[in-house]
Image (cartoon, rainbow, N blue to C red):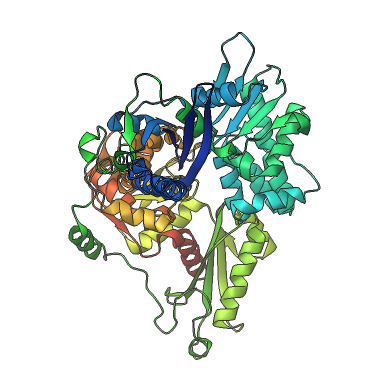
Length: 619
């Protein structure tokens, strides 16, 4: 017979199949097959493919070994159990036992590694430590809502460094220095890492510093003063694929390499433990034919969802009609010049023109945006790029690309900056003006919608709500320490679920059962996403739920509105987040108001600066 353990985590599915052989003397259990894949928020679909492939492979091999055995035609028996942060809901629907993952990991130590005194496991969004002492119940500890010191923390650092996560180990191995990085929260660590990048600290040193921070976080958050005794068993994907992480953890624990146990199937330990426990509590035995179809009827569970919101659009036709009605605001464009980014504009055409040009730059915490207008206020050139921790070099590169595209004879008659790097760029490049972000965004909004009554700008890590009365700013609200509900909020989760942010946004617009994720912090939102997946929510339902969550966070946490009448009837939204039309639509449905947006929402700060430079120059 066989025993199968399935570990459905927040980002991956892991399966381990044991071959059980019994005789009069003993019972042996051998791991004969494993499978590991990212499920991209579709555990049932991915799990079904994995299960079919695994069981078919085992049957094929056994048939070669014993071609005359009649049991090899799908009739061999297998017990099944499920574990993992997303696994409970699927275990209930499938009618198979659920095993808590810490219990599963402890069972592996009990049956296979009795010499181990401490187990350390790092997963995608959780970490755990188990202390074993003879004659006593194992002391099991897990991280709480904070994902500091987990695989997600490593993934975020790789993104900031602009490298694939598979490159982290190679970089860290070449490090010369280790710097302090806050590992308690991804938001705080991002600030520390960006600071190191801006100081030109090497990627090698940053990678090693991050692995050191993860190790320190695991030890301090889980051990909490308890002595870590050898031998120590390490499990989880990060330990399996990043040897440098093991070295940093050994140093943090004060344990020599001779006292470290790294199992052959390190990343499958909870799945193996679940397989070991799959025969308990009167389990059901499946033949292979039945087992391979376990997941086939669990994908469409929308009838069971208990926390849903109205769809943003009924169908594609309604969405396209909505888009056509939004073409009310526009940016005047100099039609003689191509506006495609890169080197596509025609220098010869521009050089035939006469006139002056006005430059606006929005230097944000993560991106730099520039806009160039002619003396009639028409858009001539635009650029959008990531800072990678260096606002100066980002702007310099944008200027170089602009001159490569348009030619060096472009005469800048006026220039203005705003944003995170306003003063730096104004001083370093001798720009003419600098204005606060709210004025830049208000100037841009008023130019497109003169009667504007409310402006909402949502950027990567901040949001600004501008209330307008009689053409002037009456009140301003901004988010404070929390960045939940901002652009990076959606981007982070899209990447965690395996999607590009544009694809994630498009899926949201046509979701029929948006899942209500609430308005919680980015870190705590992980638990809501896991709950949605446990209930069987589709990826598009989760994506649409994020769109609602962004707006709810803004309306109820940042602005604290008493009545939607405070917004007036001429609402303008801007910022890169509103390239996601599902977020715009969520605002309309929640407020009952019509909302306008421009074709360049992510450039509105820079556009407002360019307009300010044009008007200040009396042209």
